[in-house]
Image (cartoon, rainbow over all chains, first blue to last red; front, side, top):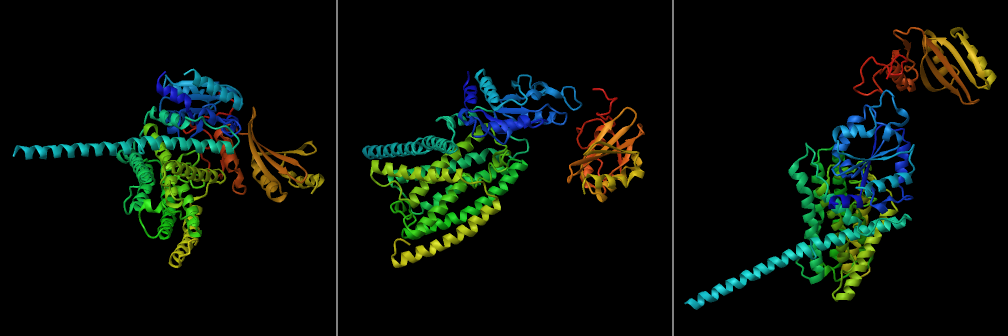
Length: 143
Length: 333
Length: 146
């Protein structure tokens, strides 16, 4: 395993993207980053710019307005990077399947611009912070 | 005749080897000890101490010991994205200028501590070098061509203007108290902090250092649009790694400067000097961490008012006390 | 005023309404045609007075309905005005934004999703549909299939 991937696993910095979520998953992500769950043990840090990020935590079913913006944020994240789809809506559009503004789950939109993207799924509505931690750790350990 | 030429050639050879030896020694000082390698490692360990103590204060565990090293290594392994409209030369050159400034500062301070080799006016060189990283930050972020970075640039400029004044006034207090010498080795022999004006100047300089390091309550520039990243918004990959290492190295150089100017430096004997010096350094870092963890961030106008108005007046009082103490020989003023 | 007095006060505007239904003790529906909705709304907001909550748009089979929900906080009573728009080709109703600025955005949203024209609305621009959503397609109308 190359040193780049090894160091990525030791220090994944996350950036949170909301592509039209109901905010439940966003609340759980913000809860995750509080001292109670202490994700700094894993080196996880919330950063304010996608250019500093290694992992994108994407919530929400991707709306028509948000789709090009999500692609722009993905392009601005320096590779190698991992995309985490948090919540049922991001994984497979959840309860909004077939609605008029939905252009597809997150992996469809990301794969349009990067077919080799590394995407991980954390289902739940919303997933508990423990589930998100477990998902992140499992995904990073398979890299 | 041949013998004279031989002698002259031997002398030239000796000069050459001496010059080469000097060059190697200089490179060793700047690059390895106490220069880049030593300061960077020490700085990353110090930044781990900051994160760990902050974590313990918040009743959590905190990052493992090598975390800052992992961060820097990871950043070196990411691709470096440069915005299309950014001014490339300045964008890429600014982090290196900042690194060079803090590197020279740290090397100079450690050399003075270890060898007592100082020169007249070196405190002025130190103050000048201390402003280089902040200026580099301003230049780098204004070359970023991003509205977030532009707002951050404006705030950082105002912040730098705010705290430079009390910083220089505090050093004037120290210079007055130590008898008017402009040499760091001489200042480091005395402890100006053990007097009223000196203690006042010490506390205010501590807050100025807090602002220079970009710690709460004065981290207005960087984490300001929290979830926006402020000045360093467009930096990524290797350039961001240079910024992080620069910040870590400032965490070594600036408290060391404070120790030398206010708290009496490292002393002359080897082991007791080392222990007391490191103890003073740890004291200052712990004070910085405690202030960082117990305060919210202030607005830029609050910071300006605090530094110019309150600190300025306090330092004016301190200068008067120092002058009075000096002329009448009262040591504790 | 208590509930009795509220009922009496609402009866003052009876001539503009089709009917007053009291489904429960604190749930009153006033039914009217679209032409009278402006006057009734003005009465409810200014003369009673009630607190405006939200507006709802419904696509019923033979007409559009615009529901204006008001709250009377002293007794916890909700008063809803149902305005029927009979014209399905070009549905239009008078906007209440001129005297009730809080209704501006909800009327924009109903216009975006149901295509109902609000006359005299100061700012009837697109609100919640995407920038590249085609004009003239109103997604919450029953005939629009995904």
